[in-house]
Image (cartoon, rainbow, N blue to C red):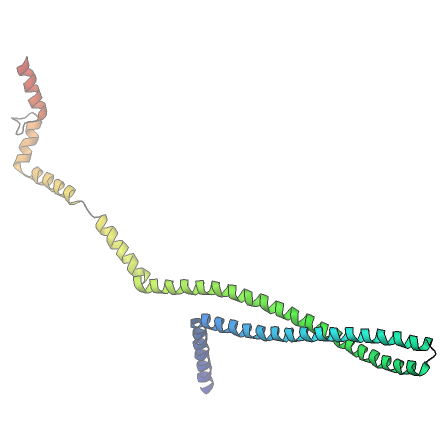
Length: 226
């Protein structure tokens, strides 16, 4: 029993979380974009620091190369003059500078790799954030459309009410014509009365006609005009 209740509780909690997530989806997307932009800003700062250090190391290595070249020139001049003692001191200094140069070169290679990796990550993150912003525009439009549809549904009610109203309109519009019905009733009443019988007999030539017709008037006029 406890396991069943626990399962039901977990299911209800999961559904409530999904509904809350759907309701706050736009706010959550905006927050995630802000977090991503913050991480991108930090990565840019890291990249800038690496590039500055890389440039400093490059300048230091260039100075070492200049110093080594200058000392080598001086050492050759001392040797040419037969001064081995100062030449030996210069050689020791050159050796120390060359060791430092090797370390600087190794450091510069590592920095170049780190700069390349960090720059690639920054560019990738920037592209993804651009996609997120564009997706945000689509999400806002879809959310606005969904809210508008819900509002429309609430304002016009359910579809059954619409169908009932349409049926009532059709019933009123397509109902019987009261004027036509009145004429038919008059015909029925005339047929049931004696006047109606006399009219029909007079029209058939049995007895005098009860009503004067246009044809009768025309015939009379023709006879008197002759």
